[in-house]
Length: 89
Image (cartoon, rainbow, N blue to C red; front, side, top):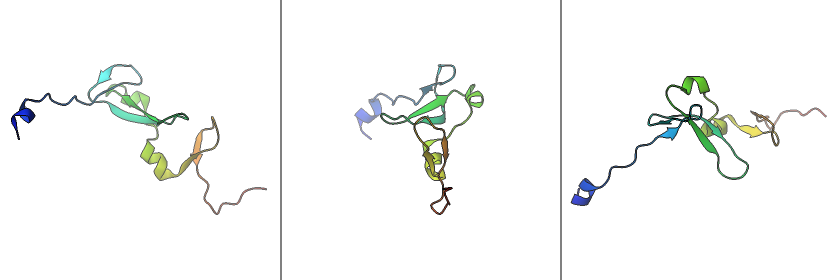
């Protein structure tokens, strides 16, 4: 450890604005992931007061593990069909 390390500014604590009430919270909880067509997705956070009111939606790793795909533009997420599924024809 050197002198500069001891006298350096401390790192900024993590925090985020609540997606329900808009207040900044240092104890924000990730509640859902919103994918966007143009660019990276956005993670929404909720403060400890609002987290139970907002509820938890799918996070990125949960969507990937479940094999969820988008049915089409504007369509809700649905589980991917197994590769051996029969299609009505």
